[in-house]
Length: 332
Image 1 (cartoon, rainbow, N blue to C red):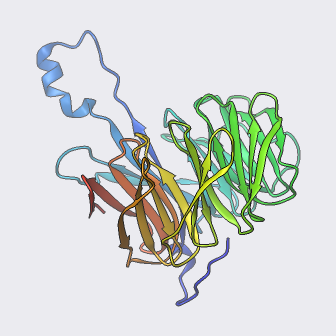
Image 2 (image 1 turned 90 degrees about the horizontal axis):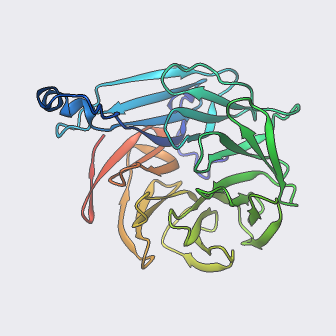
Image 3 (image 1 turned 180 degrees about the vertical axis):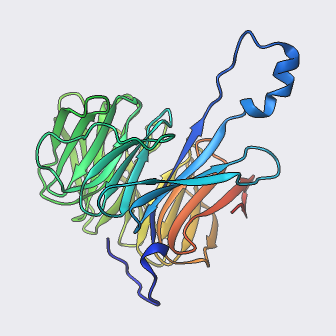
């Protein structure tokens, strides 16, 4: 992890490097009476939570109330072995967390209990840099520091598949399609690699000559988005892998990018604390604002309802903005 600015010294516990959203949907009971149903409407609303990781050896989980008061009822932490967490992902059903520690180890945890799931390792691999889920809860992917990508079974922890980008570089960004047929990787040397998820065949590679910090796929698989150190967001056509656009506007390294689940917007964040929201259809910048609470911004994420954006950095840590039409208001 490298920061481009060192304006003030930040205590280790104030460094927050990554964030991700989860959503717990309440199950509807067909045998519930009308009176009981009316009294439990609030309980049946989906429950949102945000997970953050940083310099501390733990994950923080903040649950957000779905009611109109926008209160935060509670938060808790899950302890981790080893060192702090710089990359994480949440399973599609929001039951599991994949966390990558600074020491290169990948850990799977249960969101509710924090119980460590089976070790996801087929050999002495402790050089993991990134992680992602596809559309299945049964598999988790990990990008290594030598250009390899591993697919693990989340139940047994066994290796299911390995993919080789043929570039011995740190995979900083990892994206997997919902059907797991396409695996994408971005690395520190500026390579963007697309691989067939079923066969492992390398489909296409491009190079942008600057480190790629994050890679995500548009939910509709129209394009990929990569955060780049040349202060731009690379828009990659899918499935061809060709560079479609290089979106300018940031004045510092773009550290992270995230697409809204409804496919209408995407958000980018640069290390100077600038957040930009873009229209997915036109790729035009809709809104820009500066997070004054963090000295270095590390990660941004859209919630699963596509109406909130979270971002983290050094200083305050977690920040949440609520989307109201074309405006974003401070939520937390």
